[in-house]
Image (cartoon, rainbow, N blue to C red; front, side):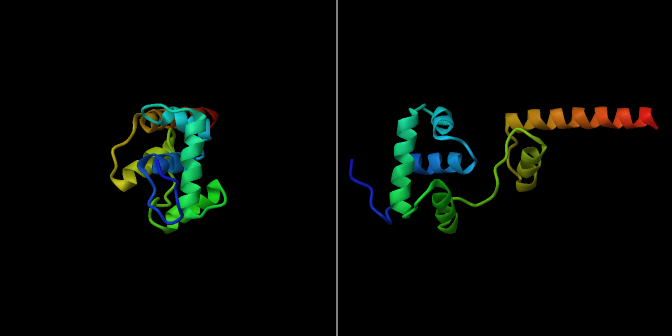
Length: 121
C-alpha cells in the first residue's frame, strides 16, 4: 500500500469514516458501523490518511475541507428522531428504520402532550 499524499483522492473507507465522524461519532463508533466491521485503530488510520490527503489538522478541519471540496455535502445527518425523519422526507430519500422509530416516538409524545393539555383545560 502506498503512502498517502496531499491532494490524492480519498479512498472509499476514508470517505466513509469521515462521513461517520462528521455525524459526531467517535472512531470506535464509526468502526463498529462499517461493514465489514474494523477496529478503532483502523478507523483512526483511515482518518489520518484523510487528514494527509486533505491537508487537514483536525477532524473538524477535515470535515470542513471535505465539504468545500464537494466530498461531503455539508447537510446535517441526524438520525433517530423527528428531525432526521423530516430531513429524509424533505430530501425525497428513503426513510431509515431508526428515523421511522424516532418519528413514531415523537408522534406518541405529541399525542400524550395534547391529551394532557386538553385534560388541564
